[in-house]
Image (cartoon, rainbow, N blue to C red; front, side, top):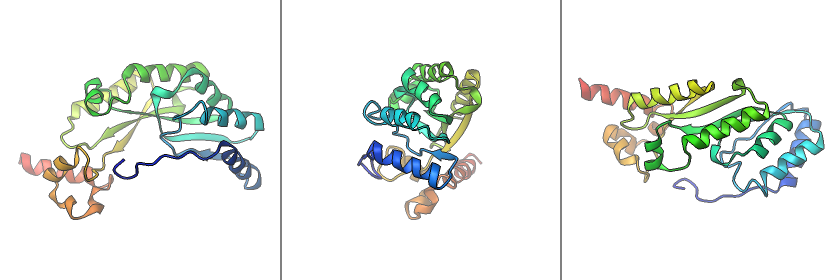
Length: 209
């Protein structure tokens, strides 16, 4: 919300027409949805979209490389994803530490996540098609928390994708991030997720020495 607090969904029919154009006129064989709010208002948006994709007979593979919200996935959506030929599914987990979720966002529980996996496996997806994002690079994040999250996903038989933290001014972690790496306050490029975790590591190592 600090970056953008609006939310809009394009009309389902417009999306279908775009998909048809890409799949037929442009001969596109793979289409990705980069939308981590894809399952919001699913009954009125994503579910009708999936049904129209199936009815249209569009011949291409679909991918969800950005994390979808595990709490909102249900057996119906899982079945529709499989029927519509979705091939790559990425789930949002961030951490397998229940206490962390309760204190940070309460967006998901491990029970929600396990239920989501069950629905996908029951629908016919295999473990190679599913992975989950784990958040790393948070200020003061214990190594054991990251390891526990990786072990949790391994026990579920799916791969982990690391999502690297990037601090945003005005958020909970910004003050601590500046304390560790003061230079980010005057140079926004240093907050990039490809840079900030390394700065944090260097700063902490220097403090330890």
